[in-house]
Image 1 (tube, one colour):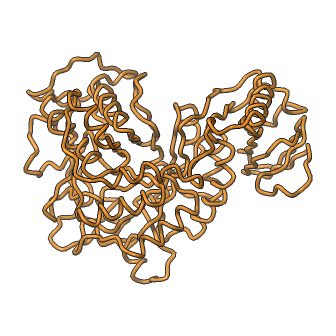
Image 2: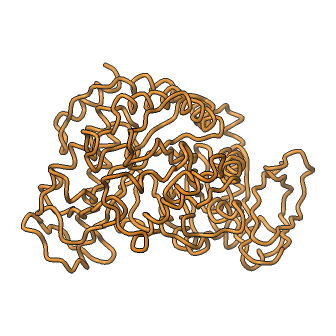
Amino acid sequence: MNRREFFKAGTQATLLGAVASTSASADAAADISKNETLTPAVLGGYTADDHRRRLQNIALGERGVRACMRKHLITDYLPGHCVYNLGEYPARKPWDPDDWDERELDKLRDHGIRLIQLHEEWNDSQRLNGADKYSPVNPAGFRRFVDMLHRRGMKLIVYVSTGFFQRTDPDFREEWARKQDLVEIYFRYARCSPASPGWRAYLLPKLMRILDDYGVDGLYNDCGYAKLWNNRQPPTPDEVLAFNESLTSDGAVCDLLALIYAEVKRRGGLVKLHISGANKPQTDLKVYDYLWVGEGGRNGDKLREITKNHPPYVAPCLDMSRAKVDSEDELYLHAIPYMQFPVLLAGRPFTGERAQVPGINYPPEEKCFWTRHLRAMGKHYREHPDGPHSYGWWDSCPGRPEARPTHARWLKQYLPMVEEGTWAWLEIADSNLFAQPLPKDVVASAFANREFHIVLANYGHAPVEITTNAAYVPVAEPSIPAVKLWKLEARALRILRRVA
């Protein structure tokens, strides 16, 4: 029995129902996904010396850190995420992956990217190409792209939504949603109620079919989070309000998310969830593997403070369509000390076509940020064919030529620090790791596995000096002599490795 047959057999009588399988691409990926260049060292391969070093380093943290914001054991963590732009949608001609994408994926693999995320251009949400919101614009091209990724040992998750659905879609039913539509650019999305049995019965088999028919490795759920506790619109006739909804407990939507998470995990898949802005789901249930935060965020300091103690794993993407940073390094300053790593935007450049296709009814630019932003990308693309290009909805215009090399440089430092089985002590408040208390606005976190790492972040606007009680070398410059005295510039980040 192959992997797909196993998952199918295991879900014949599940709550969400089973669907037929037509693709074998994920079967071939099962072995390729063990690619050692992409997968962190697993504990089953540790020698006795590896285990000894790991335990000794954990002891340094356990005995050395007396107080911290949070302690966490890192397991099953893929930090290198990339939102890959397949092409434009809506478009005069559907995207079709080719040799250009093969070369681009080779670069991303070598960069250290492990998880590819497709946004909504993968599907046909407006039913312009004979498909729908739960199937690809170009089925053959999509299957080819899935195969491209799996041959490289990379995983793929695709955009879905447990709330947003085009109100003009022929399948839409009025009793699924209250009147609170999201109207932007080319879509008019109803926010379907998580308490609607009809919506659940329609949605859940569609989501599972994406996994079972196309061999993708999971879902990116742009939740369309419909809070019921403060919704001023009257319930629909179809809603069953079973839960006590409140500011701290979103019962119906989190029940729905938990059911979907269980079905995706049953298939060996991943779930990335986006609520809105920097928010997390209001529940103690396990509903995601990764939480996307940052959409609409203009300030990295604010995003960091809101999300730094969110449950793992957080994948930040500060919204560079609106935000400004002093340098690309600032994105990593806000993320790495809190066991987060920014998402990369790559793939095909945005041409702006999706904001100016004939026959599509767009809102005026002065009334719609996204229409204005994407058309600005299109204008820049036409006037500057050699770039710098923009690569995502949340990218700047013009693009950022240093974004990709900076991402690669920090990812190379970050991956060894968070390998499987690492213990992390985040935002250390009291410890014997330093000769004096940390200066104001400086944050330190520690990571222990076969090596012992300290991350130092200076969020202040003046340089500081920090003395460690043991000698360390900077991971970015491993050949320099180990020292204890560290000069940290304003708004700067250093990753250090302890020398025994």
